[in-house]
Length: 542
Ligand code: FAD
Ligand code: SIN
Image (cartoon, rainbow, N blue to C red):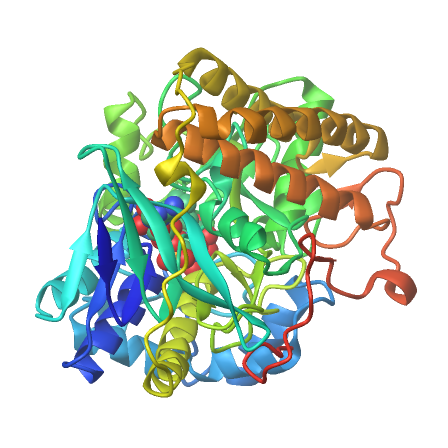
């Protein structure tokens, strides 16, 4: 099936939906399609709890928010990018409110939460269900647009690229619907990749199943550079509940007085950082890792039971209910928690307008690496970056679309017309997926070593080679598509981590425990095979 649109957007989280509704609103005569691989709401965004960081009170300032972001980013943030995003924060919150997002208000003002690494309260939230409220409002806005089509249960397989006056261009994406057993070629002059994170590359993660790094893998295969993928953020406090789906216990719980303690009841964070439980995330996650290794236990505790039940139920209704459903009353007992892979600070290299190395290909949200987060993301800066980028990228993409003819249609992907007989081997696929994810959790976790990185790399390269050889012989399925992407992203994460011979932010390696500004105060950039720097203005970034 061939489909033509002016704009296609891959992903229906905060980044993709904000971009889509803005374009559809500003250009009612242009056509917009959103492709998303599961239900429209299924995204990291939908599970966001804490909120959006923004300067909203008289006692806060842009300088403070910028300084907190830079300090937590451990020397690798791009200050100009940080300044622009932070300054745009209040306008962003207003735009979300205008679209219909209802944030929690207390005595006529936004209720501002506190999270790790922030020097003041600045997190705008909707109780502890901020992401769900944002998804609801953005989806409603998209559904009101007559020129916007939503393709749910449709997975993008690869980007369509071709040469235009010597420069690589993106002309859309190939997609597949498992439910309909249907392949489609989506052709468009502008493709926005807003596929979110890579958490599922790890066995223990706060991310939902959709977060398989598809965007990073697709962009790299298409010829775009990726950066800083060694900086994987582990959230310190995922609920320890090994037999059930992962569940996050928001950092906002510590912002409201929650305290970490070991099984002996010792409040250990004072040993590790002056900001104690509200230290930056890398420090807290490493502290918990150290405590667990010292005691041999599987989890530590987070206690908020000293606050009143009424307060806990009002401020954290979702966390309270979900823990109760799993048999734990958090108003009475401490919560067993463990660090889990949560966020990728790295991704596809992009400027603040989402422009990548490939003309016509834009990225925004967690899939992108703009330089905002450096070596460690400040809590609740992700949703902020995603909306600001989507907003700026929409302006850039509109300008690009209006200056272009429709792309010449390149031939369809090999897989679509392949005559190779196809055999299904689900066992191999699920085995490889499990093996990579376990290996990443065991060898590429909070504390790394050169030996382990090398072992992991050898193994992942072998698995990736095998997957690439059997990929086209398999009947198309989400499982094989995601496996290939998980393997590709795992390889990129390991390669990035192996390059950086120092410890900085989220990358802690025992062989090089010190920071080395002289040699390593720079981004880790991986170029795809055959990469050529784009000649056009569009492709020049950062
Ligand atoms: P997502 O919201 O993940 O959306 C990606 C979309 O792409 C999904 O719709 C997915 O189905 C789709 N997709 C992926 N691959 C394909 C494909 N191949 N084809 C078609 N569709 C595809 N950040 C904060 O700032 N504040 C918070 O409070 C906060 N809390 C969090 C809590 C949790 C539990 C988690 C997991 C993350 C949290 N984060 C938070 C991080 C933040 O939620 C994410 O970084 C952000 O939502 C990413 O938005 P996005 O639009 O880039 O991607
Ligand atoms: C949380 O609520 O702890 C998540 C915040 C974030 O990831 O920024």
